[in-house]
Structures are given as C-alpha cells and as structure tokens.
Length: 325
Image (cartoon, rainbow, N blue to C red):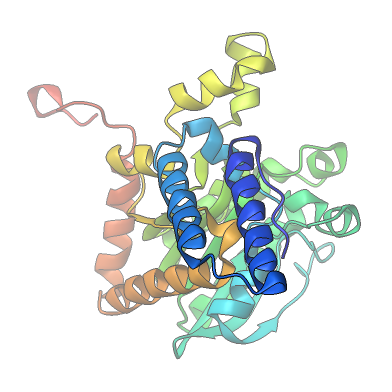
C-alpha cells in the first residue's frame, strides 16, 4: 500500500524513496553498496524517532484522520474471527456508518460495534463519513441488549468526527438516541470495553463509549468538539485549530494523565496507517487482557465500578468539608 504522507512525514518519505532507488540501482548494476544502504536505513530510523516522538497535538489529530489508517472493519478482519454482521435498528433502517454483530476475539465470544469510515468518495457516501444517524445508535443499543441477553461482553470501536448533524438526523431525534445509549450503557449488565481507534468526536463518540474500560490508540483523539470547531468559537477563526488542539488536551497521553481513559495502546513507529497488522495485534492484546479481567468481576461490582468511574470525571480538587463535588 502506497502511503499518502502528511506534510511533516514528507522528508521521511523522500528518504525512503531514495533508499528504494539505491537498492534498485545496487541490484541492477550488481554493485555492493550495503554499507551505504545501512547508513541510510539508520538515518531514516533516526528521523522517524525524532519526528514521531515529538508530535504536537495537532499532528496527532491529522494522523487520527489519516485515510489509510485502519478502520473498524479492518480491525474486525485482523483481530476478530467468526464475525457475523447484524443489520437494522428494527425502527427505521440499517445505518452503514455503524456496523456491528457477533464475533470472537482470542476465543472470547462478544458483540462488537463501531463507526466505519470510507477510503474513497463512494465508500464515504455509503458510510456517511463515519457519522452515524439516530438509527445507527439505536442499532448499536439493540446489539448491546442482545449481548446482555446472552451474557456476552461488548466491544466498541470508536472512530467518528461526530454524529451526523443534518436535518434528517434531527427529525429522527439524534440527541435522544445518544442520550438513551448513555443511560442504557451505564446500566448494561455485561462488561463493556471501548477503544478510540481514530477520531473520538463529541457525543457521536460518547454514544458508544460509556464503558468499564476506555482505551485509546496512541495517535487518536477524544474531545467534546473538534479543534476547528473550538477555534471557530473561541478565536472566531478556524485557522487557530493547532492552538486549540494543544489547549484542549485531547490526545491519548493527556487524557491518561487526567484519568479519563484507562490505557494508551502504543502504535508502531510511524503510526497505525503504516502498519495495520501490528496495530491490530496491539489492539487485540489490550482487548483480550481487559475482557479477561472484567469477566472475573461480579455483576453488582461491575455496575458499581462503572458508575463510580463516570462520577469521578470532572473532579479537579478535594471536596471541601467532606461535601460531594
């Protein structure tokens, strides 16, 4: 797969092209330039480490949006087995932006749901650019209730700029659909593990992210609003998106420090878009670990811990005089 580089990745890609040319020249002319090739490989590796270990919040947002990043159905094919997709919300229609169904992961039976984007215009129109309609969230809830009925854990893979904001979504009560999901996921009597695999935008992400364990890939983001939206409101100009991304603390490491997520899943050097299989293996390992841990927790404690987890969000200091914040 030919990688479409972001601006800050272009110097690395140029060096990689030169390396390929050098190898091709070496083979074609039967010249031994192994030492030169090793030097260039070391230089590329050093440049990668220098660039990817110093990424800004905005650069991580750009990586999270990369069109060649693995999407929900890529993880299904690489990390899960025996996937059977289930369709429709039994009320209106089947939302292609929110696929889901039954699957196994390392032998663990589960229900998996998530947002799906497209890599070209045709697929993006089919998947609505990963922005689900109300029926998508209602389908997700139907599948979660099915999981509860058969005592299966729920895995949610989050990757959306936000729920669809159009007139049709408002007509079919998008806010109500998301709100019901928040309430019902808090009460669901089976383990829930959510992973932010790319974009985690606003209520569209939260609608399937109320979980016992919330994980994030290293180059994903999770936020109440996009950096561009924040910049448009606070600076009155979307050009300040980079400043907004930094100020909002929306990256995985920032959110881990704030106690809003439970684990950061490291990505291969260069980002998930350069190594689908390695990334899927890391996601699978993290999911299996947390699913096995949660399976040992009694139902009553599982629900109590989930409630306490979300009650802690937003606390920024010790309560005064023992009062609840």
